[in-house]
Length: 168
Ligand SMILES: [Zn+2]
Image (cartoon, rainbow, N blue to C red):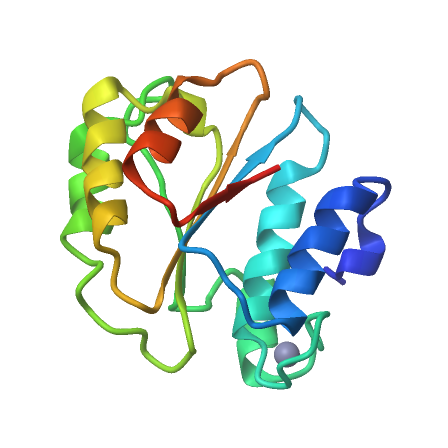
């Protein structure tokens, strides 16, 4: 199971994200801060599943086609950004998986969601590439970036360049 209910603690984040879903006010990018093992990757996963769920509630139903695909990491409109080198997310990773793909509309879901864990591993060039897409993102795109709280430069860059970012 992967629901907001399964997330222990993190009440404020859960409330914010679920309120955003019920108000249908979805930002183009979410930055989720948290230390190692704080569950930020799980929050990203649940949030993405909820946004794509065919039932449209504030929890992923776990039963619709989209939820089942997401549970088996097979939802074509939830993209986990990977990187070739273990300690770096390079501009080539971003170009190949995001910039060259972002114009393609979602297959079957309302959103196209890019989840990036360990966003602190992005090189400055990679950050710039992603920020460029945030300047004029297609309406269906949502980024969810998870990173440690201590890593802040990207946040400053985001707020300077885009009003479409929410972070926790
Ligand atoms: Zn569902």
